[in-house]
Length: 485
Image (tube, rainbow, N blue to C red; front, top):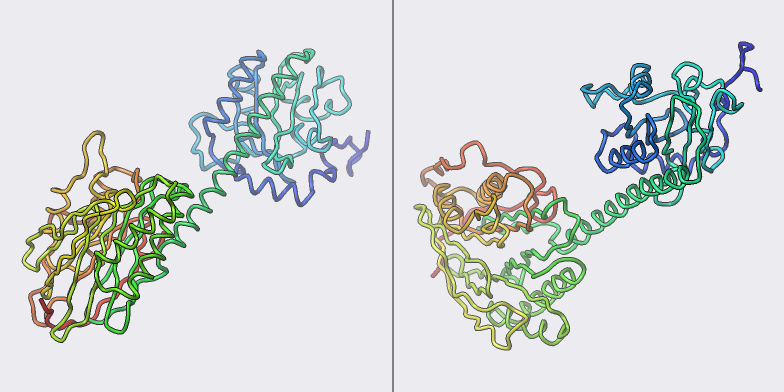
């Protein structure tokens, strides 16, 4: 046995092997995200199962870097578990999970490095009689008389930790014991791999979703613009809400907000087709009905095998001698709300059919007059269909909120709608939410905007919203002139 600098025996784990300090392995340990994390049920379930099936006083999942062994999960309620807990190997019940030092041990005080160095399972029937383990504190002071460990792998099959079981009496580890330990350790490895896959999918989904939204809203003199987008849940799926605001010439602006049925890559393809088709159609037509009609044709002809359809509302905004001229067309979309400066709120436009299902979507153009202080609100059904139990947020609540706010800015209107819906749903939405507001600023010298009493204290950006993508906010506001009819 090798001796330490003070003349005593050195623990086998004091001199780390090449695998323990391999930079690739250490990167995998950091990448798995388990170091220093709280206990979690998927891993706790496995250690409980190991302790029960193997009739062992202690089962542990330990994540190991080149400095410490971190106990991610442990199960065991006998004196051995209690001794380890009191010795600082395990966290005491009721300890603040932020204070994790009790679950972090020096490598010389655990047996896990033996498994990692060998890159193979290890089963010791009698730790006191085995040269590899007899001088380790787990055997000499903590009462571990028998121990078996199996590697736990990251997604790239680098060893990130050890799944182990321990007994306070010597015992032979049978083939059945080893098979169970291997199976449960592979289950732990599978959970780690699944999390990595989900994390990559979430990042890809967020990147793809952001690519389908404009990077910023244009600054348009005389118009107040704001839009917000919030993905459903944790943002791990690409859903079909989209919006766009773009120039259609020196005197025009195109504004569209829509919702593709379904989710995933196919929904993203349809969303991309909608974006490109609308922009192309708007380059040679000023009629919203004609533009959405061309999109309907594209959906029916370019993707005839797709079951995806979409709803959309399109606004054509034109400079006129006396102000702005707006024309609206709605294709099966949620009602576009017009809020007058005096607080009156009403839906506008003719409700056509959804796009991508019918040869004739019955699309109709509706001219709209905006006076100073008026605002148009476009939104997807993630707003009105937000749920609290079986109850939906609904159209009536939305109209009441918009009316109570009064002549606020577009940015405050979109923020207030998002905050109110999230508050109603009591958490992350189950569907995407897209909101866009467009209006004419109040005339100079008009009374200040009155506060919305129904949303006092809840008007604000909220966590994670975006006018053009997750986590961003934007919009432009300039001085306006009298609008035209």
